[in-house]
Image (cartoon, rainbow, N blue to C red; front, side, top):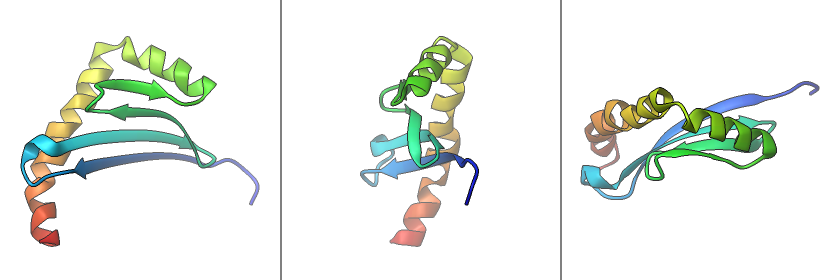
Length: 89
């Protein structure tokens, strides 16, 4: 099909049963190419394309945006960890 495809993927990665092994990842994808990503372990955005690097530089300067992303680790990942573990185990 013709056109463009924009996608935002948020995920929680759990590496252990305790809440210390959780990371929140927020990825931005354009036409199947990830161009920028926030990773709570790194604590900032990282760009993977020229456009993504520019976005990362801008977003990393805004402490409000970074605080909101880091808050998702607590609000979304840690809050739902027990539900996910219960469903899997």
